[in-house]
Amino acid sequence: METSAPRALPSGLATALVFFASGAVLVLEIVALRLVGPYVGVTLQVSSSVIGISLAAIAYGTWLGGRLADKFDPRLLLAPALLLAAIGTAITLPLVRWGGELLRGGSAPAVLLLAVLAVFLPAFLLAAITPLTVKLQLGDLRRTGEVVGRLSSFGTLGAITATLGTGFVFVAAMPSSWIVLTLAAVLAVAGFGLGWWLHRNPELKLPGKPRTRAVVVTIGLFGAGLGATAPTPCDIETAYHCARVDADPSVAGGRTLILNSARHSYVDLNDPTHLEFAYVQWIGAVVDVVRAGGAPISALHLGGGGFTVPAYVSRTRPGSDQLVLELDGGLVDLDKRELGLRTGPNLRVRVGDARVGLAEQRSQGYDVVVGDAFGHLVVPWHLATREMAADIARVLRTDGVYAQNVIDYPPNRFIRAELATVADVFPHVALVAPQAALDGETGSNFVIVASKSPLALDELRNHLDLVDEPVQLLSGQPLTDFIDDARVLTDDFAPVDQLLAG
Image 1: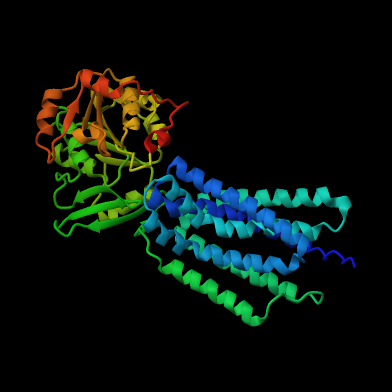
Image 2: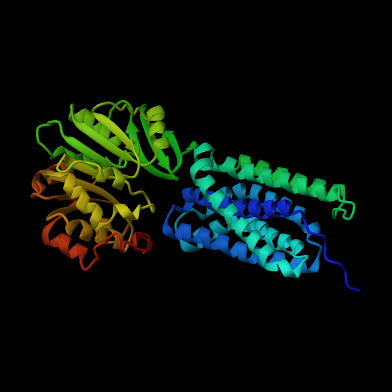
């Protein structure tokens, strides 16, 4: 006996369901990048993994939704799909945060597995909603193209709206954890609302007994509770970083800035001349040999972090004029609250992209440019190219010095390429690094020193001899041998993530 096709949902409700479900998937995808970042970084591989897993979830969810729509009355499945997606969204936080502690690092298996934990289950469930809804609306084969086209277009519009809303509004307005929990709550309300509406339809009763639905609610609340209480590596979440400040128990004014679970900066509130990290001591040595005698200098900083080097310059060279280009305005606010940052006429901050800000600076306006915008596995590739180095050379005076912090790991492919890139612009280049890092035995910070005029290498060597740990200063033929045949990075070709992956 042939059964009649289920009556279609009202057109507006069907459209809203597809719009909402598709948008929710994109919210999860964008927030997933922020959830996994503190544990595995925000690299091209991480972004690719999250996008790929999201697309896989959409593909499998759509396929399963279509199969179920042919076997069951889709009206029986829509509300449960929303409720299960709410539960899947709520448990994303504990899955990522507990799993992230175990999978911390940048290995490909860890990145892929953490991406699965962050987005697959809820995206898979939400993707099933579109084919279920489409099936309900296909009551007239003469309008199949119109129905499928309309729902497909509104699904895409939902994804676009969610992408822009999350990127421009949600992330700036609330922490990622609250975005996830709010989305879970909205999905739950939508699921219960749809179930209530269908229950009022005399032609249909919802599957399951009230006790079953109570169990679903209990599971959802439990998942939300786990998400709210799961360990978080952040004190605050800015638009770009998961950040916290830890007090140094051995130094009264010592503070460590943690960005995305990595020690980024150290600040001594009582002594700005104290440079804790080795690479910052190397940069301090470079600053010390510019304009001998402690005379004021004009300095441009690409990246602020904890503002350790700007504070050092202000204290050791009073009257210096400094501009810091920092992408993260929330980080600047944190520095002012927790790390003693005081801005003014001699220490100005421009919030925005370093390359865009650099292009606005006058030519030959600075004695020193300090590049410290790279961190752990997170490298803004557009700051590592020849075109970027050429613009830095433009804003430096003839005898000005560029000091660039680079982090790399064996086999040192990125630092070699970055050296080749800088050396393609600056005629005089040197490298500061530990011997073990140069030998490819360990990962490390490297500091590239470059100028359009000969570098004061002997004086720099004397200052480097005073730092806490032994360090090498490479120049001339040894540096050329270290660079070997590394390729110059350009705006057209800068695979920094792949070079870092080893």
